[in-house]
Length: 250
Image 1: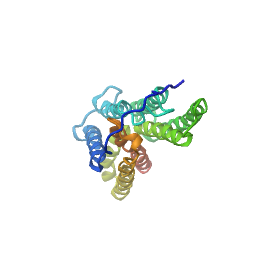
Image 2: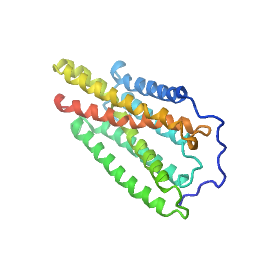
Image 3: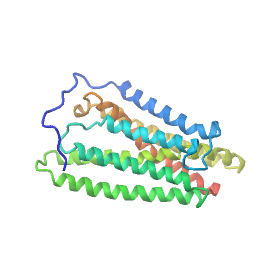
Image 4: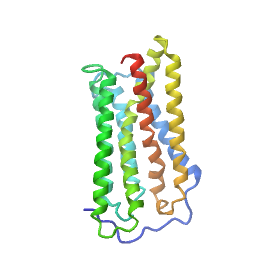
C-alpha cells in the first residue's frame, strides 16, 4: 500500500535552531489569529457557508493542513510514505470541512453547542479510524523494524491533522467576548481564555524539543515539525469555545 523511497534523504549538517521552530509557530499563530479576528473586528458576516466571516477561519485551517503535508516531516522514512501522508491529509481536511459545516448550520438549525458537540464526536470517530488504519498499515509492512517509532509518528501526524479543525472555532471564541460582557460572565470568559492560552503555549513548547530528532531535520521537514503543535492547539481552542457556549446559552 505504501512505498517509501529506498534512498536515504540527505541529512542537514546541523539541526534547526530553537528560533527557527519558534518562528514557524509564531508566523502560523499570527496568521490564524488575524483571519479569526476579522469576523469580530471587521463585522464580517457568518450567516451562510460562503460569507466572508465563515470562510476566513476555514481557509486558515485548510492552509495549515496543506502546508503541513507539503512540508511533511516524515518524508522518506520507512512506513510513512505516500499512503500515510495522504491519509493524514484526508483526516485533516475532513476535520476542517466539518468545522465549516458547524459554522454553517449553527444558530440557524441547531444551537452552537449542539453543532460543536457533533464536531467533537467526529474527532472521536477520526481518532478511532486513525488508530485502526495506522496499526493495520504497520502490520502490512514487510519490514517491521522501528515499528513503535513509526506507529507513534503516524498517529501523532493524524491527531495533529484532525485537531486543526478546532481553529474554525476561534472566531466564535472572540465573538463570545461581547456576549460575556453583556451577560456578566467576564470572569468565566477570562478563565476560558486563560485556559486556552496556557494549553496553547504548553503545546507549542513541544515543537522545539522535537528538533533534536535528526530524522526530522532534512530540508522542509522542520517546517512541518513546527506546524504540528500549531495544529494540536486547535483542541484547547475548541474546548474553550465550547465551554463558554453553555453559560452563554448559545
